[in-house]
Length: 353
Image (cartoon, rainbow, N blue to C red; front, side, top):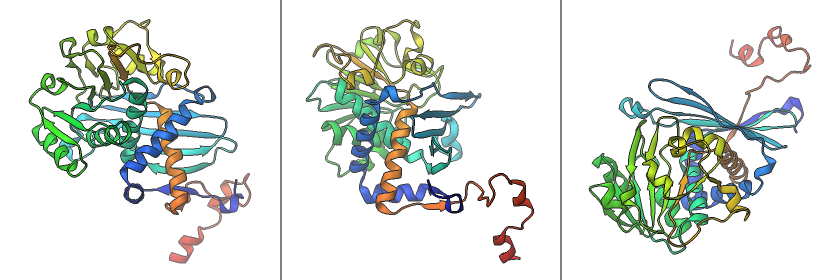
């Protein structure tokens, strides 16, 4: 811990993180974040965990996602406002902090909007590596909005998906996704319905944004051996899967107390059996029961994934010499004399006067 005279918080702006991802490459960032998530999930018991705190309004939700181990505390601020794109704002916006548990000093303040898309896709791939059938090559991607390219690339690079079957009610979103994936080597098939898109798919990823209890996937669309990566349902009143899909599948979650409130399983009784993914990764529970089983990863996003992503950002920023110090916390010559700050005029202001 630096002496209080020199303490500052490292700041990573949106531009810094864009620069970082361009310098490292999207593939390397997805691999890196996935590795950090996997390592942290194997230390599941070391974390002080809680469901995120959500403030709901008519137009969306604002959430705080805290978590800590005995050394490092992290939180993410994140929103979900489906109508935002009408005003030229992102549906999801986020930033986060890493702090030192021993002193409470904030070490890092970072953008997390772009990073959340990377970490969500990395998390999906970590789950699918544990749950999908080995040799899965075709994925249906339902919902072609802001998160879709990240999901496509994570499954391409981390699982070997070679064919994508796309569907979105917004044709422009699908066209955008197609254009952004040019030159990646992915074979793209544009479909006219969800039912058409999931036909022949080994993995189905749903990442739709509407704040409704939707039934994007219905039981008639299921095929033996399918893995469903349900990403879009992530708050009360927002689901994507027909309840019967869940009843016919093995369901895996991040942190059950949070997923029961927010995930697709909010439709089912509180005692519906689910397996937390960390148990599968740690070898404590079986994953897929058979080649014919249908598996569902009911993904809502959990604070530990942001903890992992912030660690990745901190380490990569240090490696590349990125970010800059900001004075988020006032410097005190006498830590007991906070009021004294108001007696001495700020030297920066004095210089400007």
